[in-house]
Image (cartoon, rainbow over all chains, first blue to last red):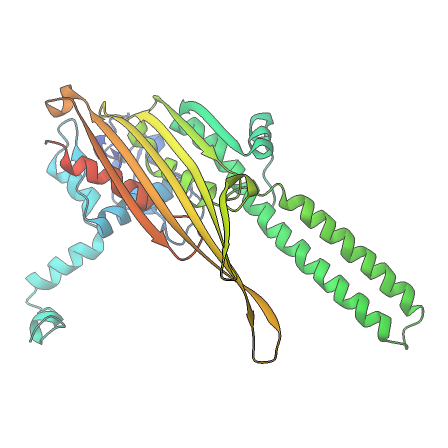
Length: 122
Length: 251
C-alpha cells in the first residue's frame, strides 16, 4: 500500500511512496519520509506535528505543523494535484478541534454565540 | 546551546555573509540550517560574554574602594584587565554575527516550501550582513537636531521550479529608517534617543505551466509592510504573497 500523506503546502499531491508502517495514532499507512523521527518513527508527521509558534527546530514535524496552522489562519485552500481525493483533503484541513465543533452541534448543544447577542449583534 | 560544527562551505558563508547557491531545497536547508543554529549559539554566547565583562568591570571598581580586602588594588586591576579582555573578545565575536533574517525567515521559509520545490534546484541569494551595517547605509541627514539614517537591505531573492511545473521568483527588500536625537531630561542629563522603523517590500512572480493550468501566464504579486521593530518578518508574509498568486490561478 502507498503512503497516504500529502506533500506540499501551496499545492498538495499524494506522496505515493511505499508504506513502511501505520501511524500509531491515526492508523494511516506512512512511508519512511512521513514518519516522525521525534516520535521514534511510530507516528506520522501530521499526528506528531509540533506547534510551529513554540518550536524553534525547523524539521519535518515543524513543517507539518506549520502547514496545518497556515491553512487555519490564512484560509488558503491549496490546489490539489494528481486527483487528490476529498478524504485526503479532509485529513489536511480538519483536525480534532474542528470535528469537536461539529459533534457538539449534532449532539444538540447550542453554540454560545447563538444563545446570546455577540459583539456584532445589536 | 553548543555551536554545531560547520564544513568549509558553511564556514565560507559565515565569513563572507553572502549566500549564492543553486541546489535542491533539501540541500539548501542542510547547508543553511546549521549556519542558523551556529549564529543562534553565537548570539547567546556573546550575550553571556557581555554580561561577564560588565560584571568584571563593576567588581573591579568595587574592589578598588574596599580596603578590607588584601591587595585590593591588584585585584581591581586584574578584574579590570579581565573585563577589557572580555569586551575585546565580545567585539571580535560581534563581527561574526549574521542577520537574524536567516534563522527567523529564510530557513523556515525553505523548510515550509521544501516539498513544493521538490528535487529541482532552487537558486537563492542571501545577504546575511546585519541590517544596520555600514555597507547597507544609503543616506544620513541631520535636520533640526534629528539625524535620519536610511539603510537598504535587499537580503533575499530566489528562483525555482515548483513541483506543479510553475516557476517562482521572489525578492525581499527591507528599508530601515533610523532617527536619533539628543533629549535633555528633567534632571539635566542628555540622552541619545533612537527610533527605528522598517518597511518590507516583498515581490513574487509565478509563471504557471500551461500543461497544469490550461494556459501559460505570469502572475505578479507584491506586499508592502511596515514594522516598528527590526525583528525578522515571519515566513508567512512571503508565503502569503505566493499563495495570493495561486488563488488567481485558473483551477
